[in-house]
Amino acid sequence: MQTLTILNTRDIKKIRQLFEDTYGSFFTEDYAYLQSKDGRLSLINKGIAKIDLQKLRVDKFGLYVAEIKGSSVRLSKEGAQLLAKEARDRLKNIVELDSREIKAYFHGIDLRKDLGAEAKFILIEYKGDIVGCSKYKDGVILNYLPKIHRGEVIV
Figure 1 (cartoon, one colour):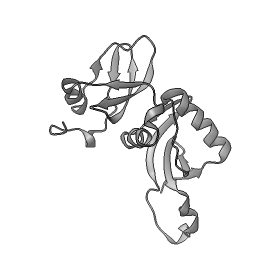
Figure 2 (cartoon, rainbow, N blue to C red):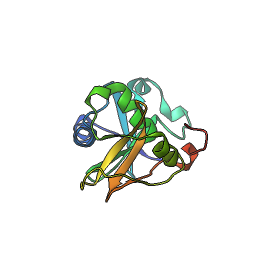
Figure 3 (cartoon, rainbow, N blue to C red):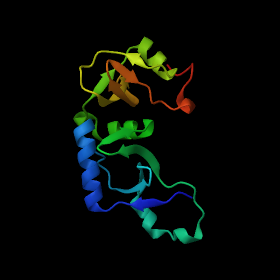
Figure 4 (cartoon, rainbow, N blue to C red):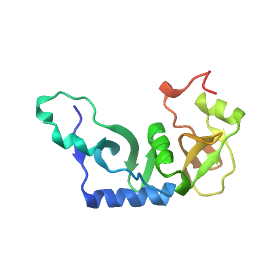
């Protein structure tokens, strides 16, 4: 079982700032935040405190939403969708893809698109829905979509 740290208010405040700098918003619901040693951030309902976890054998807690490395935060597919659901009107760095581009994205292909000179994490949108998160660098949207989410019949 992986070792997770329950984050305190000070740690959450730092992570909130990273999210707001990168994506323009942070999760609005009242979650407990867990972080693994490798920087994986998970959300869980605060009601977990009422359960005696010593009597349970659990492989994973909560929903994996992001990976934090240094001063960057990369959202998981589920994390991007949850953030959009909670704070859609405040998000930034959203890139709309057309049907050809979204099909290539779901095949795992990196996309060539000019979004400026700055390297940054972006949210991928198709027909008004956030479908994931990628990194933009040197005129290319790097595809971080896990193989388990790739496929032919997505769009």
